[in-house]
Each structure stands twice: as C-alpha cells, then as structure tokens.
Image (cartoon, rainbow, N blue to C red; front, top):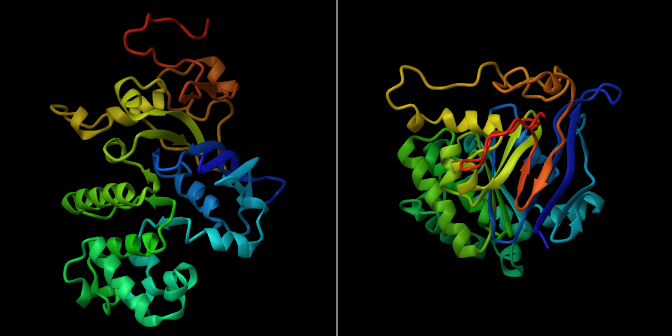
Length: 334
C-alpha cells in the first residue's frame, strides 16, 4: 500500500462558476521510504500540490480529489483535529523560504520545542527541559556548528543555510514518515546547496522516511530521488524512474527541461530554452497546455487534451511523444 496516494487532485481559486485551476487532475503515489521528485517551471503548481496535501490551502482556494490518502486514511474525510494530528508529525514540510517560515519573534529552541510540545513524546510534551535537550540533539543532527550557542539565536541571526537546517530540524523533530521539501535549496549558494541535499539524503536513509522533493532544477532532482514526476501548468506530463527519464525522456517538455541544464550547453553562446512561459491559471489554451510552446505541436494538439497513458512504472501525457532511444521511429499521429 502506498504511503501517500493522490488521485485526481485539483486546486482551484476564484469564483466557483469560473474556477482558475492551479492544479488539474494530479495523480501521484509515494511508497514507504521512497524518494520522489516533483519538477517543473515556476507556476507549474508544484507548491500548491504540496500545500493541498498538507491541508494548507485556505479559502478562496478549493481542493477537490478522488482520493488523498496517507497510510490508507483519507485525509479529506478526517476532522480538522484528526488531520492536525497527522500533519506535522507523520507528514512534515520544509518550506521554500526558511527566513519567511521561521517566526522572527521566537528563538530557535522555542520553535523546535513547539513542534515537540504538540507532537512529541509524552515527556517532550510535558517538560520544557526535555524539549530543549531534544532541540539540541536535532541541531547537532542537522550539522549546525556550535549547536548549543544556536539554541537561543533569533532567525535574523542565522545565515540562509543555517535557517534551512533549523527548518529541517523542526520538520524531522517528530520522526515523520513522509517529508515534503519545497525547493529547499533555491536561495542557497552551490556549496551550501550540496550540503543540504546531502543532509536530506542522509536523514531519509537514517530515519526511513519517504521524501517528496519539489524543485525546478532537474539536476538537483537527478541526484536526490529515484522517481520523478514532471508537472506543467498543473498537470503531470511525464513520470518515471530517474535513469529512464534522463536517458530517454518521452515528453517534449521533459526533453526541454533536460536540454536547458547548463552541462548540456557547454560551448553554446546561449542556454537552450523553451520559448514562451507557463500559461497562467486564468488563461489556459484549449487542447494540450504545452501546445503554444511545443516544437512537435500538430493540429490535434491545439484542439484536444491528451489523457495520461499509464505504463509499467511510468506515465505519459502526449499525442506525439519522442521515440525512445533504440526504438524504431514512427509517427504517433497516424
């Protein structure tokens, strides 16, 4: 049984009679201990998908799904209190901007302690001294230098890398079964980015956690997860194991994201780039959402929406996919 099982997830904003869809029919399953990447350009709906799982989409946003289940329990059917008992304990999230997520009015020790006070062991819930001791353990675990001195630091006294490590400490404080990391390295320099990714990999191994890593950077995802789902304008365009996706992508959008990686552009005057931008949720084209930007577009793509085709361990939403390496070329439109 999947640890997280999402079927037909849609998130809409605006008026009910003219909804603006930020997420549109996403299916995603994560097995216990599995590492999965969710990638796509800014505006693709990655963060909104994660917030919907966490129950953090507030009105006027509306979440609709056939199923959002965690360990077999339908999260949408739970009372708010029952859902809060899961979120923060069994499902935890590292937010994109740690300095915005941390409360500037409270110290590091207090903010880690709050997670323990709500979701920790009976001793941790009762004892402030035990919470402080556990906070120190967690800061050491996420490799913050001079952890004892940082306990009473305020968020503004932390560097970006340290703030992100504090966010990770809060997220893992209650030993979650699923960790959602939303662009955890976006604002960090390359050296610190590598350290944070290595830390996440170590923690998921040591704690046996499943990981959903959200990123616009395919290079980050490639070294950190075993399976990847490619999101565009709120829809999953392609999903599969990392080696297969990177060696032989089937969807033109996946191919464009890979071609844009700097290491694939050595010697070129400019980086390869897909023309145009992700359509806004309020101005979606008819037919395939990628059609206005796709180099393989045909007339059918402009008028008909492709449905996801499920293979063994893979998903593809395209009328005219790229031919896998080693396969005989064929026009899929005939």
